[in-house]
Image 1: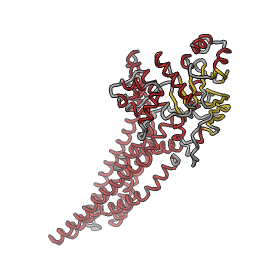
Image 2 (image 1 turned 180 degrees about the horizontal axis):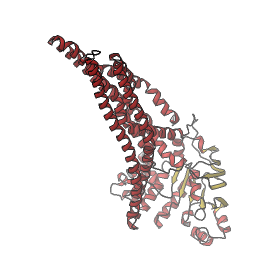
Image 3 (image 1 turned 90 degrees about the vertical axis):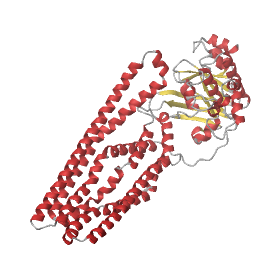
Image 4 (image 1 turned 30 degrees about the vertical axis):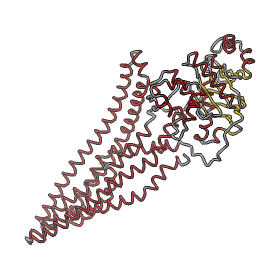
Length: 573
């Protein structure tokens, strides 16, 4: 990801050759567009007066050949533009996807989280449409106007006036559709967010009878989207209709001016017909540009948003690959805020653990326990202080390298559509089957997996829908233990476990400690503390006590999640 911020400009730079080819083909196409006008001019001014059939056949053959080359060049231009879109996808799609994954960790996402991917699709679709071709044809309008002036000044002035009018219409279209297009995208993002939220919480929506009320919110967002979209469509369509009428009116006016000049002896019949055709051709790119203007405005706004998203990604420099941590975890006066917020959720936290130790983090709801868990594994970077493994700060590692040394089980376990094996192996295609089974056994979930319909190859569905909450939590624990990570952070790991699961969790924690790892367990239920030897008590985002488990629990005199005596008794049992 070192080149994320430069991918947009580098793609543009690498595409200059393709755009130069498109520009060259556009020039040839527009020159060849003169073939029809020249053919009409020659037919009226040479063939008809001379009544020469061979001349007509020769002109027709030449014109047909020119039209064939024009069609071939147009086909090549379209293919090049579509391949430019494909190149854009190859260059940026992975970076945009990674940016989408990182966005919630860097700032609050108010709209649709997948908007950058839709922006990329919109830019690709525009590149493959007729819009870019029209833009490449626009610079050739002066050529047609020059030929019209060569026919006669009056014809040239009429064509120039029509062209200026249509250019003004184009600029007005841009000004009047820009806000509506941007607002339509924002409303669509809100609508998609409501849809995704409702889909993910379908059980709650159904059980609590919220479907119509959620539907009303969706309908409101959809109505705003349709209103802005309709407004942009009305403006674009209205000016498009005006452009067509203007072009036809101007074409007829040119024909009338040509007829007058023929009667007055200042032009020939061929000039009259050819100038009418040429004027229509000169204004066609403007008409086509207006017809594609909504796509152009949407692609332009999407490209700007993509640049902002990619530009927000930090580009780390080259880093030395550090050895795997084996000795210690140090938290040095660390503080953290949630993405997009300014309030400190954890502050002035300092403690250290050595190999083979485990700490249980306790405290009332809202005390900062889960925020600390995210801080320890680098999900939320420290705004002050440092988190160090063997003396090296977390940001000294690349994400992929650090991830191999960490195990993390979030409070809300999220599994991915795929097999049990793929989820435990963190979707590593080169994962060794022995490591997968070892992780499952370390989490004491091997026998449970074998009882599934297809064992380790069971498809668990989106978010692990085919599994119970307890099964998801235990497979998530196996994923956290995959390939024996040094630091394992478990946030409420037994919230959905039964007594058997609690026993398995304790054995897993003790197993990590026995092999020299470090375990951090965020706990509300005291049974999760059975496998740790240290306690960190938090309140108000600050550490209130830290030390050996028995010592800290014996000093606790006020309730945390349970009365201190109950906590101590549960741990002792």
